[in-house]
Length: 102
Image (tube, one colour):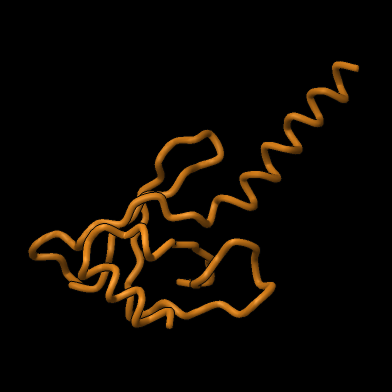
């Protein structure tokens, strides 16, 4: 019984991580003097629930097609991400994403 319980817990943790690891929790404006003014720093959640810092350049993202990965709407560097553009509070960042993902 213990083995089944542990296997179920580990399996559901990895399953939920697979479905939700693409979610971008926070997006920030590029810092002043950044090498690329379109490289947006962001934070995602790891399998342990910690924030993982990442960065992607808006000019290099591409819109994903259906069924490539659940819960994703763009691809960067061969990895899939999901960002809910209405939840982006920074007007400039939201406009960039709306224009690129339209």
